[in-house]
Amino acid sequence: MLGDALLLQLGYNATLVTVGAALLGVAAGVAGTFLFLRKRALVGDAISHATLPGVGLAFVLMVAFGGDGRWLPGLLLGAAVSAAIGLLCVQGLTRATRLGEDAAIGAVLSVFFGFGIVILTVVQTMTAGQQAGLEGFLLGSTAGMLRSDAILLAVSAAVVLALVLVLRRPLELAAFDPGYAEATGWSLGRIDLAMMGIVLVVTVVGLKVVGLILIVALLIVPAVTARFWTDRTGHVVIIAGAVGGVSGYVGAAISAVAPALPTGPIVVLVGFLLFLVSLLFSPGRGVLASLLMHHRYQRRVHMRQGLLALAQGQPIFEALTRRLMHRAGLILPDGVATQAGQAAASKALLDETRWSLVRADTSFAAAATRYDGLTPIEDVLTPDQLRDVDGRITAPKVV
Image (cartoon, rainbow, N blue to C red; front, side):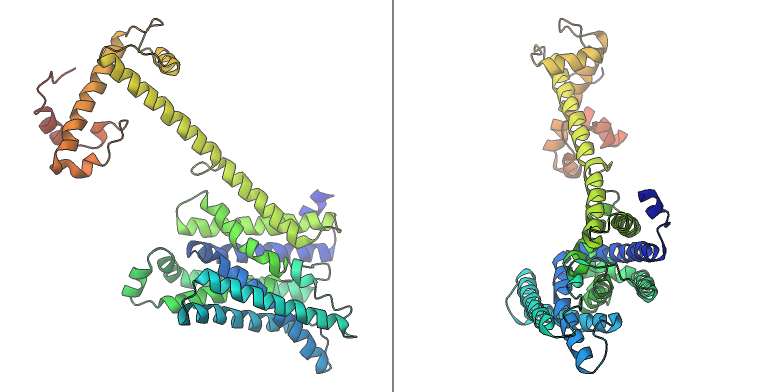
């Protein structure tokens, strides 16, 4: 059954929902990358919660003028206006008062969300509002997605991707070097405003799929997941878009198989699963890679200490050190050094002597910062520098 959903074989509506959720995931992952890199993750939360009053007020106004309060473009327009006002409030509080951005976000988020809940309560008392289904904007509701809704998602995703492609350079500068961005003529205020506009578009069109409460997860989780795999901004953008797209696609497919489960939370949970896999198994920053790196580092430290002990004629008592050196053929089972062990120990002692001279000479200050007891000195100094250092050693200079 899940295979049919993934292959888009469950019918027209399920296909619309799956494709729409995937497009939203791509747009959210790409847009959220710069929000994450700019360390403005909570701004997305404020924008999403600020949409709720706009949805309720748009419904009331459309009903008051004799229209259909459930008309999605009207509801999204109200959400966009309300979110924009919330964003301006955050920026105004940050600039005009001594409040930090986090405090301003908290204030705006709570006030707008509380106001929205009050409006929704009023809507439910209206004759036209009893079956409005506006509560679906809290956690998402894709059961009634139409072709026009899917087209809106597709167009919005295309607009977001185009804006990110055009504004990539200033967005990167603002995220990593705001001072240089301003020095080269870019306005940080305008860059942030453009970034917030992109996030606003994704937030508003994502209300129908994941809801205002969970849209911030779809903005941030793909970017955080992508960051585990690469250091290059362009690659982070691509991976985040892919993670968001897969989360939306698979989450919507699972929701289609289990209609009792809401689409939004399932999409977010799939994204979290991808994040968890990256956290554990990514080659550079994953937990497993860190454990292996620590294990290799520990073995190198034991080997280094064992060699220095041999060079100084000291016995090796640490069991792990003896085992590692025996496996490497540096000592015999009784702890006596082999010929290879004696040579390696002499080399280790020579390197320590070299490092002591380098660290005591201010002309080698830059090289001295590389000392960790494990990095070969040949990787730090040039052959000429090594000959200069060796010329200062009064002990035997060759091994």
